[in-house]
Amino acid sequence: MRAWIILLVLLPCTALAEDDREVRALFEMGKQAYAVGDYKLAATAFDEAYQRLPRPQIAFSAAQAYRLQYAIDPQIAHVHRALELYQRYIAEVPIGGRRDDAASHIFTLKLLLAKQENRTDPDGAARASRTTLALSSRTKEALASVDGADPRPMPFSIEVAPGAHKVGVTAPGYFPDAIEATAVEGAFVVVPIDLRAMPAKLTVNAPDGAEIRVDGRLIDLPPGNRSLEMTAGTYDLAVTDTGRRPFTRELILERGQVLAINPELETTDQRRAAYFVLAGAGALAVGGAIGAIVALDQQAQARALGLPEVGTTSLSESAAAARNRAIAGRDDARTAAYVLFGGAAVAAATGGLMYLFDRATVDAPRARAAPIVTPIVTPDTIGAAVSGTID
Image (cartoon, rainbow, N blue to C red; front, side, top):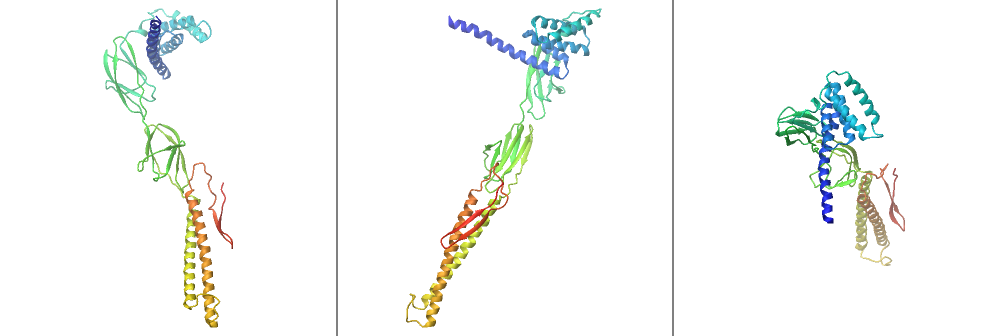
């Protein structure tokens, strides 16, 4: 028994949901037509929606459209229908809402009717039964063509023969669409058509290895293909690469736009300083190599005398002096080579670290000047000091 109760509750809810979709389409058509001043179409759409779902708010909207249409097309049937709908609104909204507006319009319309000698049927011309297709779209600047006729801005309604009709819709920045709409004899059929927006195509001609971020999100693009499709809107583009200052730009992309960006990634001051320090390390290494060669040469000269040890007493005074000079030169050159090689190692390590850790970020502060590298050589220490300022 419980299962049957659930079934009886679910079926009416499903039917109501389907009716709501039709009513929403009709009401949306009425809103669009009312906004562009097509009160005839608005009145028809609102009235059709009210027939399917008799809500007081819909009745009031339909009455407003009929009243304004009378100012453009003074058929007394418009007045009759507007008056009827205002009165229904008053009856269904006992307090609040737009009762004051409805009552004021009722008074005005009754005065107008009192001056008319020929009171036509209120269900006459304003609600004549016709076979009509009403085309609407939430896409701005959309144009629709029925059966190959000239395109017209939507919303609009057109009287057609019963049966299938080809409808084509276009709008700038949207993919065109073509559908088949079926007109029912004597019915007002709403055909809502919303187009799919074309994406914008963005190409970022950044070097391979550079990181591309859009609104802070890393975009993974294969090498050689730096293009991506994006929906229209405003974005923050950032391109970063090691040893380069970040490139940032705010982009405003429109539907269907094709945009190419060529970011100029300038070398950072730190990267230039790293090259300078590494070049200095190379120069120090060359100096150390020269010192080592001189030390070997002085050692060879000392050995050429045939007396390998200092302090031998059998040398002549001149030979001993020459040998001592060679040994002293060897020691000085060897010390210089050690100092220069040590300085080269420190400079190379410093330059390498500066090179490796030069990873610019969008929020990173920008250096005012290149870092200053000062070698430090003491009897007990070999090193270098790096100094500089940042914002």
